[in-house]
Length: 290
Image (cartoon, rainbow, N blue to C red):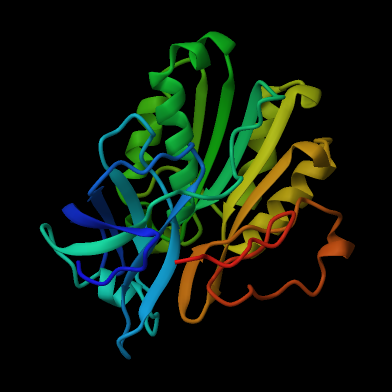
């Protein structure tokens, strides 16, 4: 791809799998590897309608040891980048920033992790699980995971509910998959309700030591806020609550970096992201230098 901003690499779509009209997984291979930690995001760039480059960040679903970048993406009508991205097929080119970013990561101070997510918010958690499964040192720690994965309907879960269930066959992962519109899926046999509706039931049943438990939420901001409120009331320490809120901005939905977990009163009035789809976490990020 000619004329890319200087900090971006040419990449090729090696494979694409559509799950619904608006949800798809893309596998990308940059011209050279892009290093990242589980939980981070990469920024894609494509030409916009007016000829300018449009950049948007997307959480990486693949683990660092995998050879390609796997992204689970929702197409947004009126978005500046996702309609163009959904026009790509295997063999097509796009740009990927040469370094990943983001501070959303597994909490190294805790051995128990309760993770709540909606739709494409599963990406950083599956990256963490795949990495943990492939890393002998991680397995030796004996970390435990409770993953709660929600969507409106089963189709919106993509193939990742099945992958979670595969992880849950082991002794270290418990997986709960829930849909908020079960009446649209008469054959659904899993949980019914929003993620925040079923979280306490499953967390309480595990009887984890709260002083060793970290909480994470990734997805729409309403869910993120509700989950953190529930986890605080359950007794988790604010220092071990982590979030990645996907804020719609400029017609896109992208991983944001939100402020650290705080009591609800301090979070009031936070309704939108700064330009570009990023919500700041702990400190503003400097502008990209291309």
